[in-house]
Length: 392
Ligand SMILES: *Cc1c(COP(=O)(O)O)cnc(C)c1O
Image (cartoon, rainbow, N blue to C red; front, top):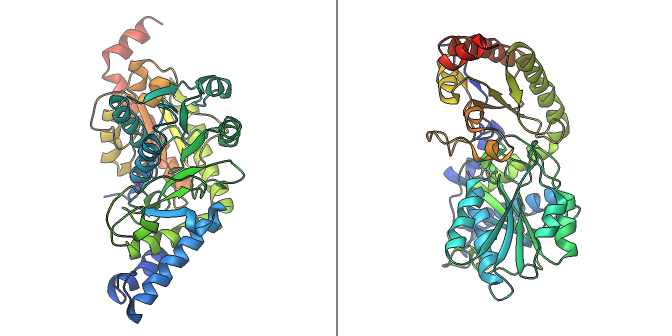
């Protein structure tokens, strides 16, 4: 088989060998529970403390504002359910968008059944919210604004600083799902007026099943998991020492290499975009052209089923996705593509290609060549396309 071309880095990333090496001693040599009293446990306690300091420093937070979780979904659940519970007396209204990850959307839908009112903001054709609409949506009983930093399907980056400023002006808390952003674009919580933030290690070349939740010290949410006194008694459960150590190592590497890598990745990505738009007829790029994650390309191909495209790319050793990993398998078109105004039949023919620093120009040339051939072949079998050509 040909070399595998992995272009699904928004779904998960490869663990870096340095990250694995950093984790290894905490599996094999020092497997201690950092909460234990004996000397053997001091090394793992120290490693977890240092990981907390590392991550805090990378986002401009204090170490005691970082809570380790099992990933992005848990952090999102904590922020939203935690606020709904803590501020139940202040109000029962929150604001989010139509393009959030399901970890946010399904949590909001769950809370709606319990009486919380949720405003789902529209986005424009590039996937950006309107700041005016956001400000107009704020009510005296609004307890939370939860808006993602960058979208996992189309890569659009939201105007986070301005959102934070509006939230602050109205005294409303601001949570951002930064799972796609952290480690890929600069994230500083004070500069951007962020009160709570979710991140996940496996989206920046760290291990799966570990993430962090940033909660500003002035925000006082209750415990999310009840049990032991871990994570300042807010998130019980024996500490995932290797996972946390690996996440901190991956975070440091990602932020240290960000400037150089994002330029390199964006150049390869832009070459891919140019070739696809120029060489595949009736193709379109989804998402904002500039305010966009450096590694994201998302296309629509008219008269094509996204699923067939994925299967044929897979036969050539190319890993891609239509929409998000969580929704593929279902035939519903992506809620994000519908929110940016694409009609159902076009939203069905979407393809998300997300690169890493390992992706080469040759890789994306292979992908562009394959796409051209596959789209042509699929269209040659499509009665819709035949009708379209006849009527032209
Ligand atoms: C992947 C992802 C999540 C979920 O993170 P997990 O660590 O897999 O639970 C949440 N939000 C966004 C935007 C994501 O891309």
